Image 1 (cartoon, rainbow, N blue to C red):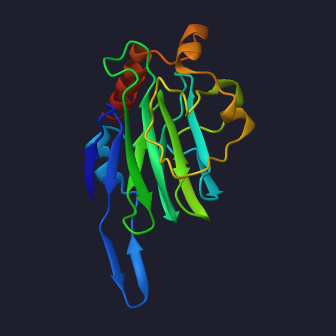
Image 2 (cartoon, rainbow, N blue to C red):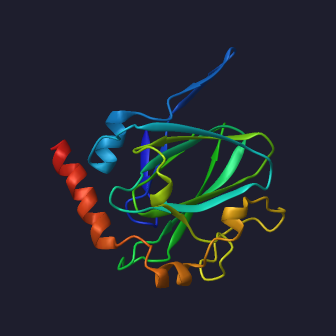
Length: 202
């Protein structure tokens, strides 16, 4: 398993070996030892989410309050998607920085999005499946979003797609509005949370 830190600090891409043969293919998109070595603590698993998306479906940018936050470990078992991570932690030296990774059912790359970072993706083909391993259960009062088409973010969405969005995502506030309303995560709170997780694992 190869691990690579993204341009957004604390987000990590994992690439497992894949073993194709005459029967099909085998891969292990999540491996605890490699995860702990790269991140510094185990992944707490509280919920597994599964989404199926038509080509052009744009989900996000989603994030949650920290604490408690929700970390996500995501991979694409069918189809392909462009996955984007955004630093929304107020006070972070890389606030507003984003990075992107293509996740698909050929490489079985996975992406770890720690608490406090924004997450979004667009499906690049029909019947694209996303699997999310989540550190906490869904908790609506703590869940938030910013508009993935906000020009200030300048996210690298393909220009040949007609986007399909939920009403909630389409009407989400801009980053500036979210910051003004005070519901973006604090960088200091996020770092303190990561330290607690590593200390508990120590």
